[in-house]
Length: 174
Image 1 (cartoon, one colour):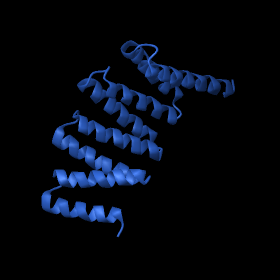
Image 2: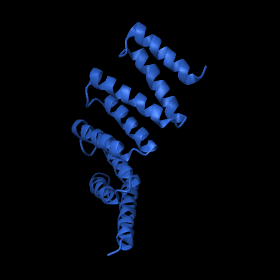
Image 3: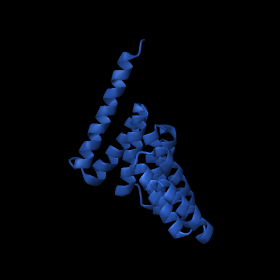
Image 4: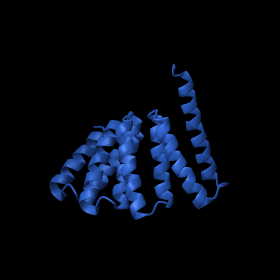
């Protein structure tokens, strides 16, 4: 038997005996999902993270940090599959939740904003990525200072997106 089928049988048994929302069932589902992600089965991981996110919403609420972590992991899986539209929407939802709960200047909130910008860039939305990187740069400059390593990296990311926009404009026939 494979690890995936072993986990699937365990999860089925735990669901039958303990219930779908029992912590042991959810732990097994999380472990299976992480295994699938690590094995680059991003579709399987996305399906697992969808289930885990839905369970966390039911049990803990939409803005709980564990719920937002599952949604962020789902966004990452979707981005790895090339489903950038869904990944951007998920990261936006994670950002909104963290901004509400942790505040807009919290390091986790800013990391989420960075992931949102990167995903927009990967999708080829350089204008949208530049706008998010500008927002991130403004916040990091204010919170961390203009010479902080993360601020400088964000500045470089913004310049890169702006350069891609200029290149695309020059290649577009008039």
